[in-house]
Image 1 (tube, rainbow, N blue to C red):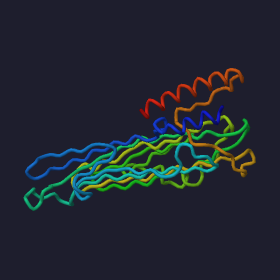
Image 2: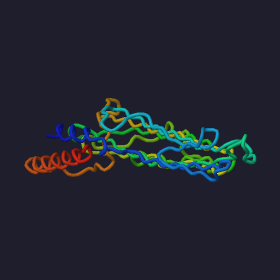
Image 3: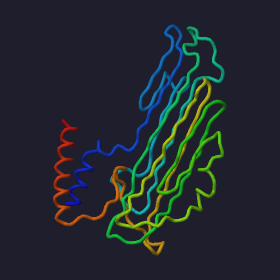
Image 4: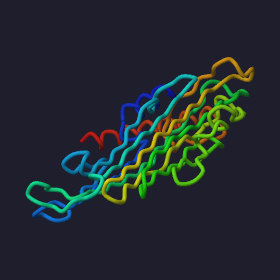
Length: 252
């Protein structure tokens, strides 16, 4: 029943949304006036005028293993170093851009309940110039760091890169959340802001060296006491029917 439930959930991708991105590009065009473009990513004419976007790499929902990596990178930039007046030969006289991201997933440990550990590293590199800004919060389990170019940057310190103590977990029960939430703002022509954040999580058995298995799941999954077998069958059957109906609705 558990395998059937997982199979149906993975066949319905809309239930596994893990990132929400929003961007806005603005520019002034000769003979037209202000132009604004918004969406998951934005672009006005070319990256030399105004653009903002995010990219994600690493493990996705449904992946299983003992080691997981999640990376979010983003860019927001406006036009030219010093805006010049618009003219027939200079159609755009400057541009600005901004973007934000809310990336969340969770790691569910597998197998029978037993003691174990999670080894976590958090790392972030902000890039910004002049009045632009890049800020994000990188979190996994009990650990979190603030990545920013305008304040002391916690995520780039050696403590977060190498020395976070292993986290005791109950393998087979623990669901460990991971998230990267932040954004960039190039709020004047000629500026740019970038972000690059990475989370790595490794699971181990109680001996601290033997890899333990986990899988990437929706962040809404929570840990609960194991139900009685008869209750589990009833709940799983109801869940299968509900998710199946929801998937059918989404594909209609």
